[in-house]
Length: 453
Image 1 (cartoon, rainbow, N blue to C red):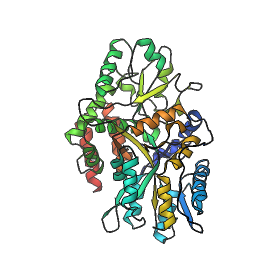
Image 2 (image 1 turned 90 degrees about the vertical axis):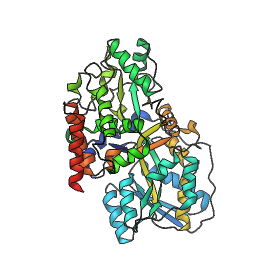
Image 3 (image 1 turned 45 degrees about the vertical axis):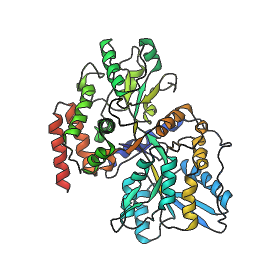
Image 4 (image 1 turned 30 degrees about the horizontal axis):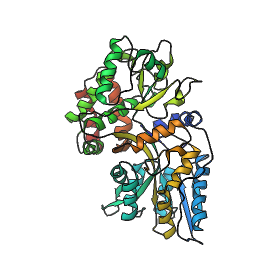
């Protein structure tokens, strides 16, 4: 499940429209997380004289994001003398492909996820951004190679081209908890996966229930378990294995995938480890699952979920006081660095006009990031920004997780064909929590892959 960028975190799914049903609820996170403030000071962009030139951008952002994007564009206008226009549409994904086919697309296009950008590149709709901009990403973004890989696509001739930069991202590798519950029980925030496993066992030994897990989501039931799987894959295997899994170059029933599923099962299938016991996992709605953090006594101690989840916390709870989060940790013994799972929007160019390419370079400048950081609802992997510009401590801490990443990967289920990522992967994880073996689940999902090839 990708929590993408319409509002703060909006649900996009390539080929999986079921997730859109909770879009209006997810965007409520903006009112919970943000304290809107004016941008002041920081890095200053200076660009070439582009007087008389115009840059038009088209994307999925509507109010209030489109106003913020126009304000960011005004910085470019003031520095260069060029004119900037941004237009958003709630039917962006359909309209942009129509525009590209007709040769009438905007100079710059904002894609909500890599799959759509890859489709645009394959039809010859995007221009390569060149080595200079690629080097900017490698030099300035934490896990720079990951971001380059995620924005490199085959063109109409099948040749890989660097086509886009990420601008506005989010984080999914998080565990939520109550600081008071931890303090009352003498628990420390774990820094490694080994420590998280030990803490889980200690909590159960103390008579506490370590985890709140719920897979319920109406027609989309099962997606929270796919997020668990993705984070586990990144912590147990190298990024290239993750990529092969996403593309099915490595079969879904490969032993490495089955290992990850069974690792999830050590938490989800242990009655002592999960609120309500293992039988409650598939039937508990994901929106209700974290409520156990806030009961007295607490029904559970930890909840792994993406950065949107406070939108569903009980009314009146306060970030940093009643709840906090920590990075879903990596193994100390596996030498896989600090991988982060997340999502984000990409900006690509449909022409190589001077003003078009310069605007891309402007979006790689810290000032473009810092302005939106101060407005709220914006995260960046840019290592050169001033973290004090974030509108809240919550976003500042999330930003530190992004800039501390050594690997970044997009949600796997959102990159898989809809029949898999929004179909058999979801239902298979429900089957797994209901007692079907990991081998049988993985075999069935691979059969569904084979059926669409």
